[in-house]
Length: 72
Image (cartoon, rainbow, N blue to C red; front, side):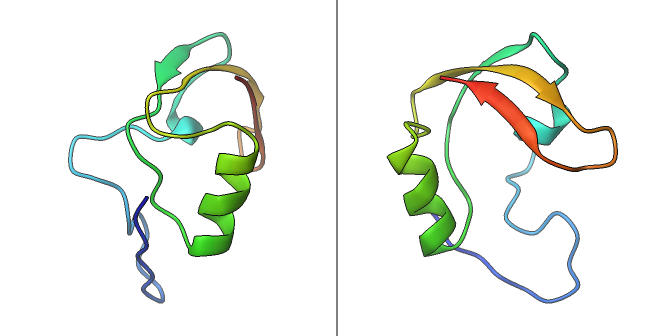
């Protein structure tokens, strides 16, 4: 799991050519390739079962970049 933080940089931490959960539509399945977040967020996601190699399905998402609900 990586950590990257920069003030005012949109898309920081996103790998080139990568797709985020926020980019996927409802019903789409994907394999988690990595988590780019701060330690606390990465740990919380791992506690919920979202780790590299996990298959997740987007249940619903907010159009305005709000929460994304996924099924593990």
